[in-house]
Length: 101
Image (cartoon, rainbow, N blue to C red; front, top):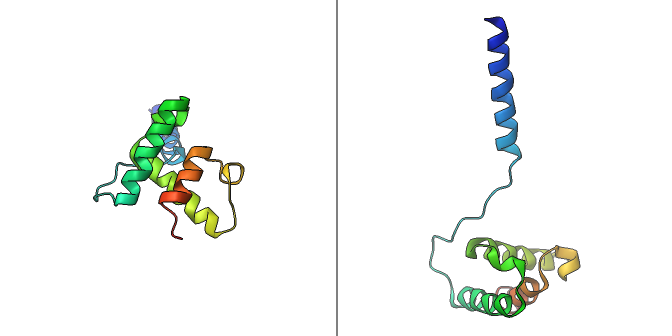
């Protein structure tokens, strides 16, 4: 009986580690999008369709999160796809539509 309790404890610990180590998923936005956010997403979809970028398979919520992150990193002096590790199309369109001027 002692061995089975130990195995259960180890199993629960392993499950807890896997769950806490998994990345957070971006959910779809619950509030209505602003006109700038709608334009940002429309332009991204056009660019991704034309260039068959693998980033096109991301959800609208994740693309908006990436765009907002680009704006935040721009405020901290990190500019460009190499600095933000985000697709160049996302970076450029975030600067145009999402980042305050």
